[in-house]
Image 1 (spheres, rainbow, N blue to C red):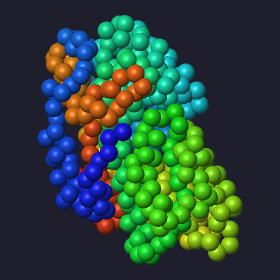
Image 2 (image 1 turned 45 degrees about the vertical axis):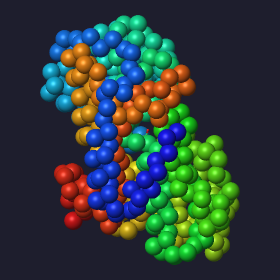
Image 3 (image 1 turned 120 degrees about the vertical axis):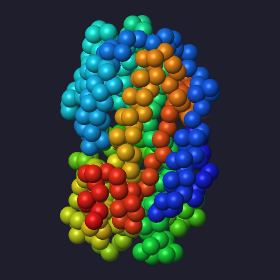
Length: 370
Ligand code: BGC
């Protein structure tokens, strides 16, 4: 995994640096470095484009579906946008992708429900001549994924780890701080990338005992949240509070990989009558932005879905014209079989201090920061 050395960009509130980071990212765009071997010979402008999204486990997926439906139509394509159902997610998504292939989709954009369970369906897509773009989540163990587009997941984790430290430092400058770690669903390739990014920042503090993981649960297998489900995070937090933080023992911080889980963790902590710890998040969900403005959840990450969808439709349009989509990373995302050429966008850390600025051009979130 690529190590990002520019630790400075992880500083909470360093908005100017973050802007520079984003600029650097787009100027790094280098289509010539693409290792893509797919035959991008172009196709008719009104072709079908399939978009297979996972269950609506967070707001970003709901937004993405709406934006794809409208954006693909506006760009002249026919769109088939599907979500995996809430319970039979893997089988649903497999059937949806097969059906898109049968209907003749020229490009299939996939936000995988389970990274490792789509090999058969993407092989079908390839055999039918369709291009496969992994959206937000990588598809693993197959050569038949042509491109990956996402916010830089490792950097998301680093920003979360740094926000956790910064938030705890602001309350108690020297520590030591007691924390607990949560990670996402094991079937989502992003979960380990977020966790590794966060641990890249936290591990040196853990090694010198300035940060103490009270439960001792530092292995990703112990921290995982199956299905990214709020109830699973809440019940694990309940158990941790019972086993490790009964009595006066203080819990200073919780690494949460996203907003849905952050709110579940906060519900658990409040239910136990404990003081609110520093809790990280991701996705800029409405309820979490409100919680941040109230001084409860400490941070979130802005991964503006509008930009991710826009760039993805840009890739589809390039393919339609017979051109190679732009990528800016050809080394980070080895899916077990090949390194998938990726286009990564820059995530932004958001706390109460920079929320107004971070969401200034987001009509849904900006009013919440006033
Ligand atoms: C996405 C996150 C999201 C999570 C749960 C991840 O793959 O990158 O933005 O919070 O899935 O839906």
